[in-house]
Image (cartoon, rainbow, N blue to C red; front, side):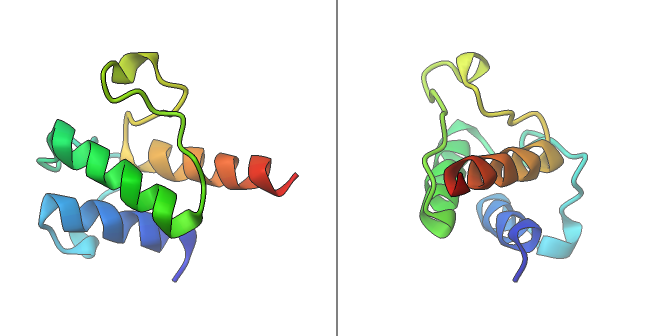
Length: 86
C-alpha cells in the first residue's frame, strides 16, 4: 500500500466512506470528519508512519501541518517522512 493509499484509508475509516470515495481535493469537513475524527486521523497517521505530526488540536490554524485537504495532508506526511529520513 502506498503512502497515499494508507492516508486515504485512514481518512476513509474516520469518515465511514469507501476509500474510492475520497477525493484529494476534499477537505475533512467535506467528508464529514469532525474535530474528534481529525485528532483520531492524526494519531492513526503518526502510528502508521512512525512520525510526529506538528498539530495543535486546540488551535488547528496555528499548526505547522496543513489539513486544508486530503491532498495537503498527503503532501505534509510525505514532507515529514523526508525530513525524518535526513
